[in-house]
Length: 290
Ligand code: KIV
Image (tube, rainbow, N blue to C red; front, top):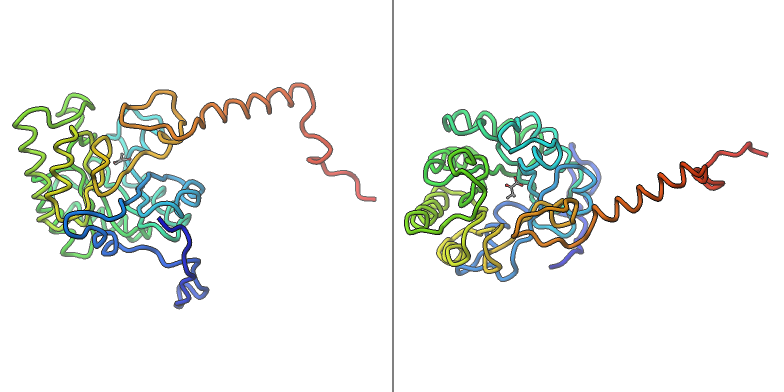
């Protein structure tokens, strides 16, 4: 994947100076799947803050402002208490911190399920107040009319099927889905329904690998896996999980770093230097000017 980009020299009244690069678009993401496959898998990570967005943006096709921020940023027990206001504040920060990736913002629990009209009111607010390009919502067949309603009114939707954390009280746990004929059939039907309704891509979370492969192969739109299969059209992880900010992570997470360990070491050194009056040193103080 290329991380060098040409300057986007087009300007307007709103943005009078050239942008560092042209941002990817939703249709460009959808077009990455050709003849049932993405030649190069889509790279997606969560981001909740401006600084993380700046760091992740050059390497990602999609930045997801996931409602997982409820747990990761706010220490909530699940994603259920997350509000539209939270998603708007973090979504706007991530858009400000990125130039390249498509920014997708999660619709939180309770903000879209009641009716397509309720979903449109909240999704249009999210797009208008954050500048993101698309929303993501959980649910398969039941959400298809809502996906169609939003899409037909100018709001691109990424669907999220398989393990849907907002339905934790119905599912009873975060275990992998698809372990019986009934669940298998439901996941396949959900995938067909959301793609048919016009979702430009779907997240497929926590399903046994053969089903993930079947969904990816049979779906016309990119299928982005998490706890699914490397054969999906792309992958997504919570950035803090893959960076090793938490000691305990789910089985499907690979820790690409040990940020928790590195932060602990750095803070320990800072605390030692403060206690020994070694910090601030000569380089960090303001001497009297001669
Ligand atoms: O909320 C989130 O971060 C997500 C991803 C894990 C797919 O939905």
